[in-house]
Length: 265
Image (cartoon, rainbow, N blue to C red):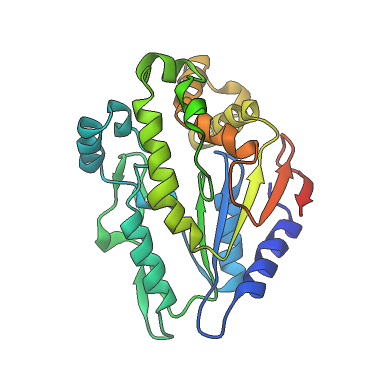
């Protein structure tokens, strides 16, 4: 679990970047199960801040279906760059930065069980002017890859379903374009770095077991296999980030239990 020093770190970065009329925008990034959402929410609570996730601004199911028909079938699956509504993210950040003490700002929300964005009428509301804006997301700050690296599949999903690198190239172009523009507006980005990509599957299975109310070692083997395939959608960019392919203010290296090994710099 996230420790006190990490919460202190986020709050110190926010305080250092706060302006008299501009709440700081802080990104927290890391692989699935790294604890980024927990940390972002805890920091928002301490700072009197607003928090939302890139997961909250996924394209609707219909929008992803249209993208899948236009670009590549794999874009029907939410998660990779290209499957987020970044205009919605920009509008939300702008509304929070322009908020007054009497403002109410709706924060987007996504229903993962229904695989659909929630109706705006039920979105959570932030009241007042935030002390900070926290945004968590698995690919926040990620940079693009060399075309030669994109050409070679790294897992079975890419070999079998994207043999011509159409899907991953489109995602990379989105990452180096529209996503990079969003990330450039962040005042600081904290990267929670997993010890390896292999750990990510264990973390994701722990999350799934928690949702089911069972111990991680009781998760059915068939479900673990399904999750192993699912995280292949994220493997390329996650490995790239772990190898240094991101713009981060601070990198926090974690062990397999999410304990802090090092904080860099």
